Length: 73
Image 1 (spheres, rainbow, N blue to C red):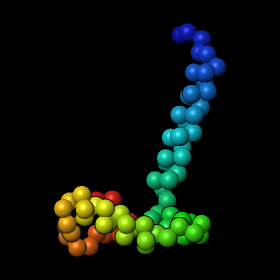
Image 2: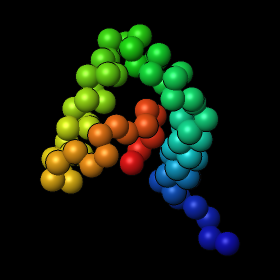
Image 3: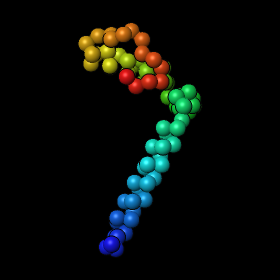
Image 4: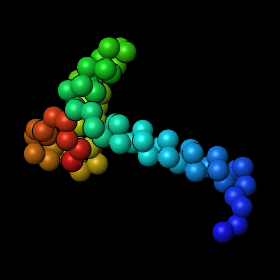
């Protein structure tokens, strides 16, 4: 095995940290994430409404009327 460069070692560390962050984020419940976002001033309901309107526009109008909360459809 060839000796790795410092850049390769650094990239491996960055990749591992990214994977760990993804795993931590995936383990958080929707409710917990929404509480954290609201705690920083993020208006979850307003953003959800904007996202729903955007998705409706992409689909050419309201698709089913109501999307389940906390799910990406």
